[in-house]
Structure formats: structure tokens, C-alpha cells
Length: 376
Image (cartoon, rainbow, N blue to C red; front, side, top):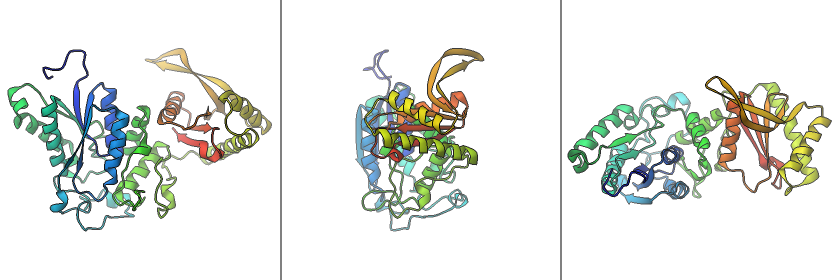
């Protein structure tokens, strides 16, 4: 802790913020842990420079103390599909993606990035550095492995004035290193991360729209599918259809799909009759009437007690509607569905152990635009 810190002030931390899904989640985790964040992004000559714009947007939502963007020309060295005239692989299978070190590996990038973050941390008196490396999706990247992070942490405390003199004991935080992409996304939604602000694609089009075919896009889409959440990012018009709604390996059963379609049809019917702009309670009452007229069983304002340490507590929440004991309906009438709304429904699914949730926002021109499907 630096001399300027007081026991009551948040501890400063440096976060490497690329603008991607992982670094946005790490930022939310660090903020949740109470750190005052100093964000560092690096313009290293990457072809997907749209991520720097995303980094600025994410930094703003995190409320960072400062966001610095440093320039270093790794493109002058080349050696990577991200910095040189080398084609970015597209359309590869999961097995191909995980087989060996891909050409999108930038030589020593994380070593360079962490060195810059370490210098920044020493200047601002921060002992903690956060980075969103992940060894599950990209097991072939040598600078994403725990062994590398441990070695760099030892280096940090040997190669800095603050480390040698003992004024700071540096720690490199890698909260995502052993998580799957789906687990990362779920954690981010719990913390209110707006993934529509992030950029993952290595080969975006001229407008910045992601291609849906590169390794980064495919891993992102697979993660959202396995998390049971639709990716909020708009992909290129040339992207394959699977990018718009990737198929999860945990898709609900066919009968559950049929029931959810019946519920959606009922919601569309209510919206056609009432239109947008009314109170949520009005939509709830009319939707229940519509479900009843169609012979679809439901429970309105169903109790959701919480079991904690084996004790059942009656201080839980009341769910808007539960259909046939298997689908939670959460009704909204808002201008925009936020990540916290999705995180809330995910919490209900987790606590209730029900397989499917539908977030229905009636305050939209077309009801299909207001439907979000979440699987447990």
C-alpha cells in the first residue's frame, strides 16, 4: 500500500483492458472486490483495432480512476496474423482451434503487456495487476498458462524498485484462468457486465461488425450458447446463421421448446392487443388470462424461498409467473433490457433449479424484439 492510501480508501489496481469479453469480466470482478481501477490498453498495431474503442466504452462503465492507452508497434516485428499480412483462420472446428499454438499468437504479447502494466502499477502504487488470460479455451497459448503468470509474478518482485525495497508485493490476478467461456459469461452477467460493448473478433468488417468465423468469434458464440444466453453483439451480414443463435450442448428438451413457443405465442398475442407503454402489472394480468384461455398451466407470483446452509429461509423472492412448473417468466416494460435483468433471471433459475427462463419485455415495437431466452 502506498503512503497516499488510507486504511479506508480502496486499494489501487491496474487492469489490462483489451475491450474484449474476458477483460470486461475481469474488470467487473476487480471492481466488485473493491479495487480502484487504473485501466491500461495497448495499441500494438493489431488489425482488430476496434477493440480499443470497446475498451474505452468498458472503462467508462467500470468507473475507472484513469484509462491510459499506450502505443507500441509490434506490427513492425510481425510474426502473427494479428499484426502481419497473414490470413486469420476462419471456420475451424473446436479440435482444430485447440490443436497447437495458432497463427494469431502474437510473439511475447502478454509478456510485453504485463511489463507495461507492471510499470504503470509501480508508478501509481498498485500492488495488484489484473489480466484476463484463460487457459481453457486457448490452451495452446504459452503466455496464458498459470506457469507463465507465476513466473512473471516472481519477476515483478525481483525486477522493480518497489519489489526489491519491499514497499509493494506484486500479485498478478487471473480470475478467469481456469473458467470456461460459459462460466465467464455467467459470472459477468451476475456482475452486470454489458457484453454488447465488447469486441472479440480478429477479422471484423470495415464497420467493426464481427465475422462470426474466426477462432475468437466461434469461442465467444459457443460460450454464450452454453451459458444459455444470446450474444448481444450484432454480427456481419455475411456471418453464418449459427452466429445469430448458436446451438447449445445443453438445449432444453423438445417438449420444453414446444411449451416455450406456446408461451411466446401467447405473449405476442397480448402485445398485439395492448401495444407497448403499459405497466408491467397490466401485461402480467393479461398474459395470465391468455395462458389460461389456451389451457397452459401456470402459477402467478410463485414464491421462491432460499435454502442457505441447509436451512430453508422464507425471505426469497416472488416470481412473476411459472409455467407448468418448468419455465420462469420475468415480465418487463422498460426501454432497454439491461445485463442486470438477465443476471437476475439467471439467479432465479439457479435458486429454483428450473430449466428455462423467458425475459419478456413488452415495451418494444415488435414483441419478438423483447424476448430473451435463458437456460439453466
